[in-house]
Image 1 (cartoon, rainbow, N blue to C red):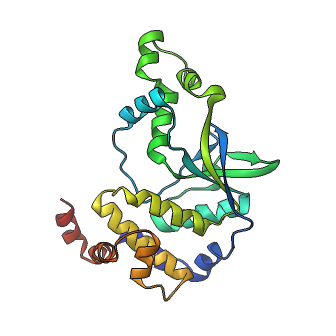
Image 2: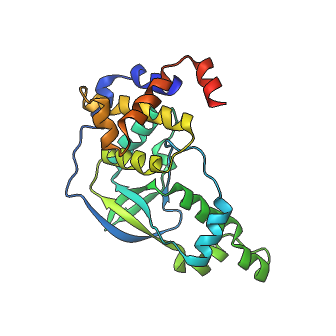
Length: 238
């Protein structure tokens, strides 16, 4: 399995270093962030459905469920990016995250939960909602967005003082409660379990499953799927 094999190809000491820090006075607050100041990186879910419909719903009713965003200082953000690349075989760099500030200090804001809503917001920014298009025709990007979100700011649940390990755990749990495609979920379970065992080598699979909020038998079956030859996985996927 290509994704899982990347973990074993890396230096275990480097992986332990990624997760070596501990939360420092962590807290969560509701914060208004400027659109474009936070970004998602690679995650378990690759497929996002009904984005146009969700965009219209947000334009009509607002953001009923704020997205979850983590605020990291640069050294912690860099460790988070490294961990994401290990898990998903991506090639992100710190430059993929806009440099912002929070309470007078440099910060990087990372979207952890709510990428479907993020994509719907991006659609509103780029294209506008149906009502604005019908009333005003083609408008510059962001015009419709600013009508629905004053000063182009979006309310989020901002988590401060947490670690990359905390962020990845939250992200994985949030993005697998509503089930992704079975093959995405299976690879996600395997990759995340292997990565967590770097920090906790004796972590039982059942404990891992409960920690991320899933039935142990479901997780065990998914992990078993990833050990099948690739041609069999392909048959099962189809």
